[in-house]
Length: 96
Image 1 (cartoon, rainbow, N blue to C red):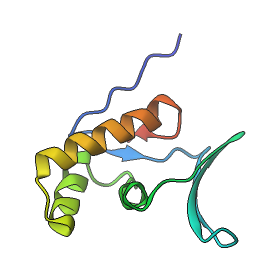
Image 2 (image 1 turned 45 degrees about the vertical axis):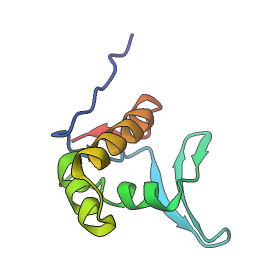
Image 3 (image 1 turned 45 degrees about the horizontal axis):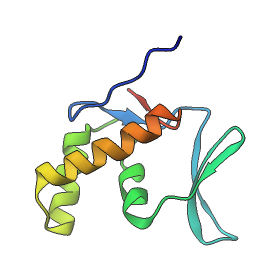
Image 4 (image 1 turned 90 degrees about the vertical axis):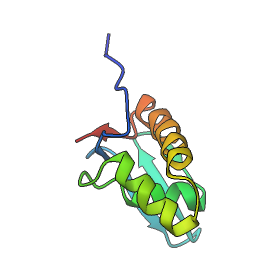
C-alpha cells in the first residue's frame, strides 16, 4: 500500500511530471490534467498552483499571498496546506 504524503508548511510542493497545469485557450481557464482526470481550479487555487514549482515552501507561498491579499499568514498557510493536501491525496501534487 502506498504511503500517504503528508504536507506541512515547510514542504516544497511541485506538480509531478504526469500532471499538466496549463491554460485552456478554448475555455479561457486553467486546468490541472492527469491521466483520465481534469480539475478546473478557481482563481485563488490557480494562484497557489502557479507557485508550486518545486522552488519555494508552502510557508513562503502563504507569505507571498498574504501580502497580495492583505490577509493573516497563518490562515492562508493553513488553507493552502489543506487544499494542497487534497491534491496530493489524489496524485496531483508531490513534494520536491
